Image (cartoon, rainbow, N blue to C red; front, side):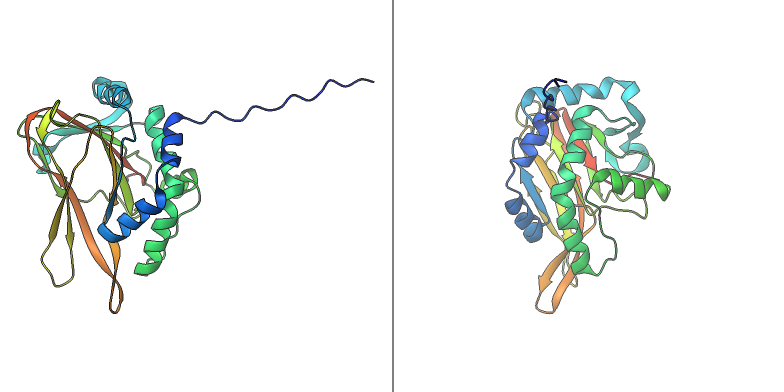
Length: 249
C-alpha cells in the first residue's frame, strides 16, 4: 500500500515582540542590573505599538480595577490593572521576558540567602502564586497628566514576590509630555539614600529591582533596598505599561 508523505508540522509563529526581546543584549542587561539595580531595553516597542497600548486605557472591559493615586496618598494620576486574559502584547512581554530574568533572580536570591527559587516558565511560577492566594493579575497601565507624579514605592502585593519588574514608556518625551522622569532610589546600609533618574524614550523599557538587590562588598554581599517613582509631569499626558511578574492577593 502506498503511503502519502508525512506533512511537516509548521513551527509555531514567534511574536515580533518575542523576537525583539530575544535580540536584547542580556549579558549587558544583567551586568547593569548587578551594578545599578536597573537596565534599559532600548526601543523595545515601536511607536505604533506604543500608541495602541496607550489607547487601551479607555477600554473598560480589559481591566479589573482603577486606582486614583491621590485618594490613597500614592501621588497624583491614576492607573488600571488588567484583568485576565491579558491583551496579547502584555501577555507576550510578561511570558517572554521571564526566561531571561529568572536566572538572575535566582542568583540574587542565592547571594542574599533567600530560599525562594523561580521555575523555568512564568506559567509554573504563576501556578505557585495562585496556589497561595495571589490570583489577581498585576500588569497595569498608568496615566499621568500635568501636575501628576508617583511617590516612591515598591510593588510587592503578597508573600510571593519576583525581584524584578519592567516598565515601558508609551508616550514620547518632548512631544506628548514634559517632565515625568522615572526615578529610582537605593537605601544603602548606614548611608544616605541615593537617587537615580533613568532617561527613557518612547518604546524604551526599564528593568529594575522590585524591593532589594545584592551588592558585593568587602565582607560579601549585602542588601540594598530599592524604591521607584515618577517626578512631576509638567505638561501633556504620559502613559506607561508596567509589567509585574507576581500576582496579587
